[in-house]
Amino acid sequence: MTGPVDKGMVQRALSAHAAIGLLASALLYLVCLTGTIVVFYQEWQRIEQPAAPEMARIAPGAVQSAVAAVLATEEGKPATTHLYVHLPVPDLPRATITTDSQAVHVDQAGAIAGPEGNAWSEFLLAVHYRLNIPGLVGLILVGILGVMIVALSLSGVIAHPRIFRDAFRLRARDKEGVGLADWHNRLSVWSLPFALAIALTGAMIGLGTIGAYGLAASFYKGDVEAAYAPIFGGEGKPDARAAPIADVATPLAWIAATHPELRPTYIILHDPGTRGQHVQLLAEHPQRLIYGESYNFDANGRFLGAVGLADGHLGQQMAASTYNLHFGNFGGLPVKFAYFGLGLALTIVVATGTSIWLGKRARRGLHEPRLRSLWDAVLWGVPLALALTFLARLLAGNAAPLTAIFWILTALILLAAAIRPEPRPKRLLQRLFIASLVASPIAALAG
Image (cartoon, rainbow, N blue to C red; front, top):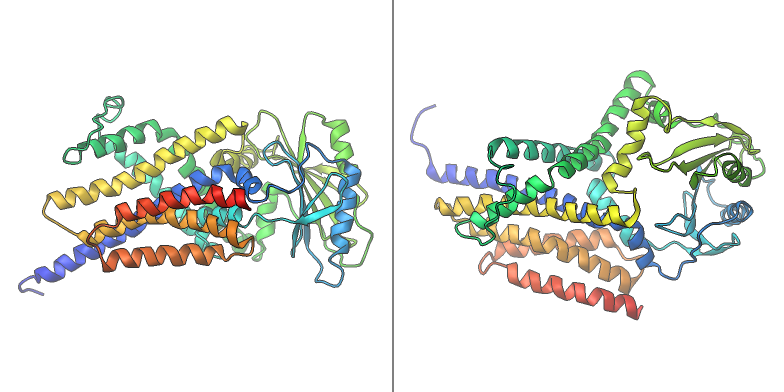
């Protein structure tokens, strides 16, 4: 096909290409920003529900009483397949029991203290983990974004051969984009090991799910749990006939007596109240990156064996270390603050990278006010929407539709920026964001 090229069509194609690049950058920015904030996941829960009972430890007998009390409230409901007991730990010194239909706090005596109310913390984690998209799609998309961060980090180093030599040279003032580029390059170098570690572990968590489903389809007749079993342990043989509630106190006493250096963090009661029930106790190992080792017990509290996350084959130990390395769940507050600072640096790198790209296009005569306006809306509209969802949680309670509020607000901000690109919405969004930050602690104190 020959003939004159329609310059207007070319320009529209270039604009569409730029818009797609902007969308990818926006998703990267959202994942990095929420990941930075969710480092303090346990602390956010305590802020959301400050009146929940807290304790350093809870006695095994009290845990047994709490399990019985929670299951008693579920009589007449569909039988829960798993019951989870979150035991008090330094970052979150609370005892919480979760079933298929409810989550409640219990006090130190094992009595039910009230429903758990951490909707905003869970919403924030869901945005970072899967962009609130149900099923596999969200996990896969976030995993792909992790791969993109790895590719961008490595290609950025290759594209700037002097990047390490200039690591401590910073021209902070922005002159023709030089200052912005220097901030981008310096923060990229300083946070490079962190960015690679976070991106690789994020990609493993997200895309590893695809591998598990592929293995299940090829070798386990579609049973995903069976595909995960060689690494994380499997389910027991089900037997739905009724039985007394399993003994969860004895496993806690056994861990305290045989492994006093370990800290139990979770108890999972599989198929409670049936003959097929069994107990899985998760315990943290000091000075290890693994999230814990799983110790299995029968319904009478008899020890059956450990899964091997602490001393099994290397693949098991690596898989068990991925989560803590990604989320910074080791080393307490000092590590969390380090992750927060480095995560903020990575977020700024993503933000400035797109801003530099748009600036270069403008200096080449490609003036695209709508794209600049949309990127302003992303940079400041997304934090504003997150802050407003937190405010909604404080004012409207745990039942507030946070996911809908966030995405509707974000869509409206982007739509307004696209319809009216001039004047740029940057300053207005900044002021609204600051106002929401000031209002949130006031609302928290008032509540």
